[in-house]
Image: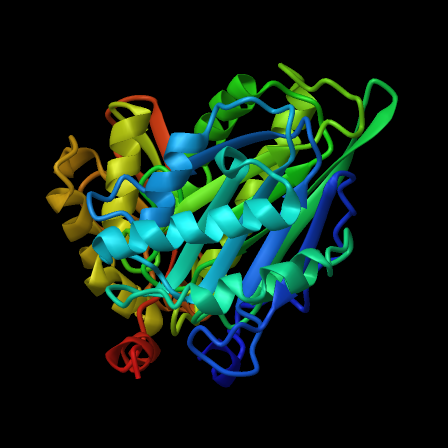
Length: 408
């Protein structure tokens, strides 16, 4: 399906040139899970000593692979590790069959790679409620393991796409203690995007050295200000998984290193933004800034209420500076707000000032801002110092076109 849709107008020029991460190799194959002649399985194999951290959807209907991954985090790192992902089928709401599929895939992959099952993580993305034809995957595992290549990260990013219109990658290199530390990752996601402790499918790799527990703590904190601050359609997936793997190959211990923390945050935020820019049917990328809230948590509640409002999002699609819909979204959020303290901006244009339309407001100025592709809506609540930024896209008829016949 992804290959038949036009590339998002918000897409970057192309897939970035990412640094090779020592200690990680990738392979892909076309297993025919849903579509023929399309790569739909990705394998990543990491060297012994790799620390693996992850955060996952908190959906009460989360998929079998998610449940399996959650039980495996925090184990010993003396053995290698592997991640296998398929697209086309989510292996969600599949009961015992789904669990058996995960068990069979991990068992056979363990035999092929000599990696303990306890260090093999899987993910599936696609249609919910259909049995995963896992034999199509297991039949290709030997071939996959024989094709591993440390430079194949772009192919891996393509293999996990569903309704995505482009592969998403981000990376960077930083200097720590006189040595180079590299980070590279990729993500998939376009619809069913409203993360709840994680997001879609995201895999990030680094040659930094860090203990698993420290990496887990860092990842959880970074997720809250990146992937947990994006939304396309307010729907949280059953399969959301975000994993970071640190091979330690650089020999640089980054525990409590601010430079590494900032670099990882930058890569995660880049990937999060790329997901929003590929929102199904999207034509606008929207940043919602909230300040003056009672707390950061309440600022985020307001921000997501604005970003998830169908009325706000359709007004954005129509390039209509309908600020009344922003007022509505704030009022319904459930977080504290005072009508007579509220200020709203579209871009640099002050629209509402302390509970009333600004005397200097001209609709044509706000309308001009709405015609751009990258938009900013700012709100100050005048109640405190709490602040948050969230990111979303507009809601167009294209979203309906994609999702009305997704299973066909």
